[in-house]
Length: 443
Image (cartoon, rainbow, N blue to C red; front, side, top):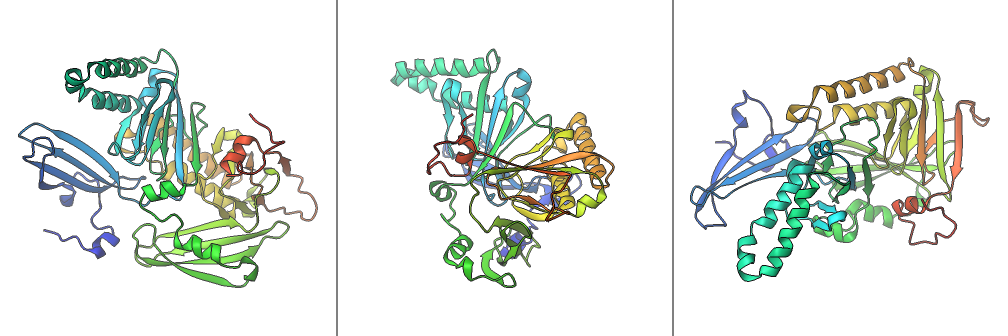
């Protein structure tokens, strides 16, 4: 029998890839107490790695005495840097088949029927929109016999509410499903990916102090505290500062290097890089060295050849990326802030949409979806090779993104830079609505 130690956890040896031939892929069984009849039942645990997604813990419990059973899926990966919110307009029965990963930290809401499933009241699940509705119905129906005996009026109102939930599955009228997860580990399928899904809106947000406390993490991590306490004006461009931190993946001690860099004809930015010697995890992130600009910036570059791929590019975490010719739009914070080249950004986009897509393989995959994403990846390769004429748009409401002008200080004939007034909603996304917003547009 293998022994689970801190070293094996750090090296991820306990998480095995799914394999029909793997001897170590069988679940671990243990005797555990049934909370229904208080007799002993059996809990089965499987620590596995889902390709293109992340490590998960799959558990199930069954009791032979009272036939109680349940199943649960928990993310074994790290809490993401930002929270995520999916807003889905369910317009047809086909939308009920969209796959949903709902972490236990996620809140699910359907405003039309005033349904809200608070965070941490249900276990994590991999299901569909219809499955979420069925799960809510089963949960409400479970205690109805007792309610009818003790509070018949309450039971009648719940029966009426259950009927409303069941009618939603007929989709006679459009309704809205909102999944909001501060951990960032939930997911709602887009069947038209990588194209823009008109029925699905994805937004990312910074967690509040209360949400950090709910997730069991500090209100401000050590690195942020050290950055806040440091003197940016005292940094020089040649100085690299190092901060001690923990690896986001294996939690082993690691270090983050930070350097202040002046981008020609633009502004100063802070580049941060973390490397873990234990598990090999690497990440880099770019933050603007200045404040949010008074106006948003939209940069449109016409790519005319392979030479454009070497242009330096700064994409802030508030920037959206659009490629109109591919009907592609990458929302705010889908990729962290990056200081890279055009080729590097396109490679990152391909990895995010194709290589790391959680529903590209296994039972969740379909031939049509795989072919569509494969075609998207091939088009990105053609763009990088200079074989496809496109326009790349960086739309940053904070005004902190940049594409190198090869003709500087003269204007670039292939690049258009527009300044615009932010909407009220964009100010809200940037956390600026506690400031004076008079004069801003509203949608």
